[in-house]
Length: 454
Ligand code: UDX
Image (cartoon, rainbow, N blue to C red; front, side, top):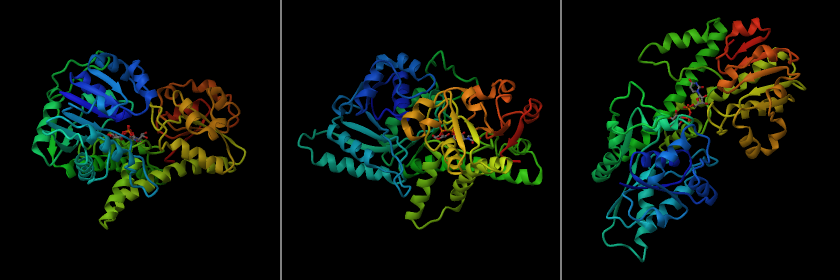
């Protein structure tokens, strides 16, 4: 099938490259010439393991362009995967989506095209995009005679850092439209994924337990809500275990044991029950906020989702309070933060706990040094005012340091030669913000080991 993808961010690029890999003929459009040039040269503008390899494998079926006229005409499916940043009131800013929809409408010419909202958009946006498409199409002087189109939603559930795996071997595929013909087209598009009939790339073999992928084929509004409800639920799980973690600390229970004990109940499940400084990233914060904003348009309060957000914010503050209660005075103390990215295997800094924790420490007069194996460069670029606080080396973090906080669960930090660093520190305090270090071992090495849930 002929596919066009508008926007080559995380979601758009992964969608385009994967569909080309599965054998569809894909054109990716991005207005950013620099990005398009990079991608044409086989380079990936984002850090995502495996993406460049997949790009190379898919390249015979893949074209990159800055022009809608190169991609939309003749396409059976047009994916719109542009950014939807949060506006000041928490609702997503749909400016880019509007202009993308207008440009798509100006170039449609196929007998039937499905326009898929791949960006995470508020519930109801499908209808809104449909209206924009129809209005922009209606005023075209060069309207083709036989040209129908329909809007669908096809939410993305990929995790950054695992984008290729999650796209090729998803837990489910969700498609939503109020037009049965559009659902039929998408069903056809995803057949190789649903039936798992493709040969996986060498670097990403098919997991042993993969079977056919369930397809949820539903109406537009339900598909849109599924995305938000899923992300909010995952965020709730983490906030819940963090709330229980605080109580565990107070009653003298071990949150690791508690999380294991409850997670083994299959109705609860052990994934996304890892306690720590909490969630960050581009999705959970934005989506929970947008869900609350949508509900308030209907005069409905969402206390559970709001509480999940509050608990998450509080964890960041608790990290700083743990240090303060240990060191008493934070002013003038040197605190090292290990990890700036919101999670390992990405250089994404959006809503990263490290940024908030650094800000809170600086506001209390502490000296802060941040380190990250991958995200340092991006941090310097996106937060130039914070650049003096970046340390290229681990020695620069530990040297004369009063406490270090493990903020991101990078493998490099888990395998660190802690014995080497204990001697460099002024006071060898380590706060385990991801609950991943062996506290007894750290104590034997001479550290004062603090967890988030003491
Ligand atoms: C998430 C969803 O997983 C994905 O399905 C959705 O489409 C987009 O949002 P992502 O933001 O890439 O993906 O990251 P994810 O791996 O889900 O982690 C989110 C955050 O939660 C990270 O900051 C991570 O450190 C934190 N986390 C995760 C925990 O604190 N505890 C856990 O048990 C799991």
